Image 1 (cartoon, rainbow, N blue to C red):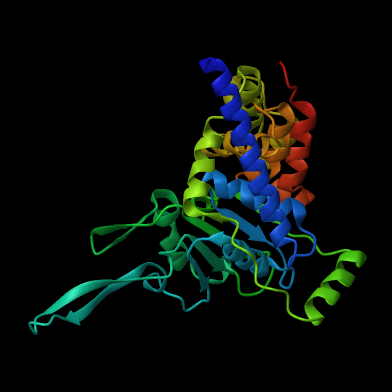
Image 2 (spheres, helix red, strand yellow):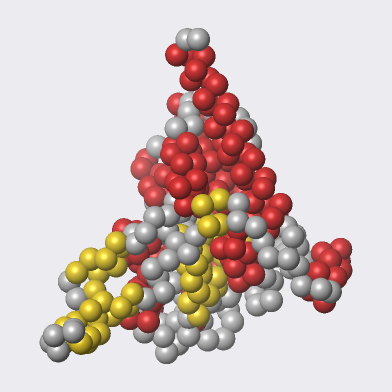
Length: 339
């Protein structure tokens, strides 16, 4: 058997195992979550890409339930932080406390906060003050926490799933742009339709469902992360992803990529981190679909969750009622796959 044949067989085996795990996770979560199939898929894609998710929706749509269910289906440690206006940064990261040694000497010991878990639910993150919100910045970017000048690494895999209510609601604080940019995806929850409401009522008012099974553990997730990065990406598909990023920038570096709606309604376009997220997400989608390489459709499908929170809109956009979704839809229509 040749090395090339072995390589093809190895790729097929990886795709089959990744798709099997992906479908098993979705099926298990569907036992307690009604609807939101696309959103659950996107959360799982972010998980295997090593990213964090920001979930936005009005109260009562199941944001917290989705995150809790994910924690139960994975053999990982899970913690929940309820963000409130009086929450302090040390309540998240931990702090040094005085402890007595057997010798009687008193020393400072680090007491770890709830951020030291594999899956961290930051519930209603925009109800805390910006000072407290920023306590997650280092953890999200560096997978470590620094307290009193000493670094404390977080265990891998590490993922923050933050929920937030729309900013128009009372008692909320907008997240800083630097923190929003560190979220791999921003996902929007929509209200359930008639059939989904009936299923929710049947599911939640009958006997409690059995506990969810654990489908994956940390080692399996880290293995799939390595597979994601090895998915081939053709130069033409990469160029298309780059063109989408450039098209969200008002100036477009003089390359003629900016479109009229972007020039009028966008102050700052997507960052290089947005391109990195888009490429990784497209690779993960291709892997879970059982395809050996990334397609243009993978890039288009992942564009909205990757980029919607990375566009800083102008006052004119607010006055005209133009949102990030409208701008991205226009970008998708106008940017060709092949220049």
